[in-house]
Length: 41
Image (cartoon, one colour):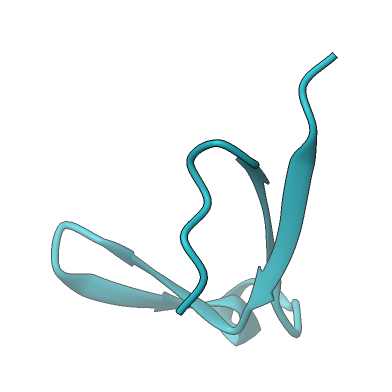
């Protein structure tokens, strides 16, 4: 089984445009990223 890192972010970028979670009635989007692809910033 692959391990994932869960990240919460208030917006995501699609085609250069920011999509805010508040537009969808959320506080943040939840992203599940595989550990081998995750890069800490």
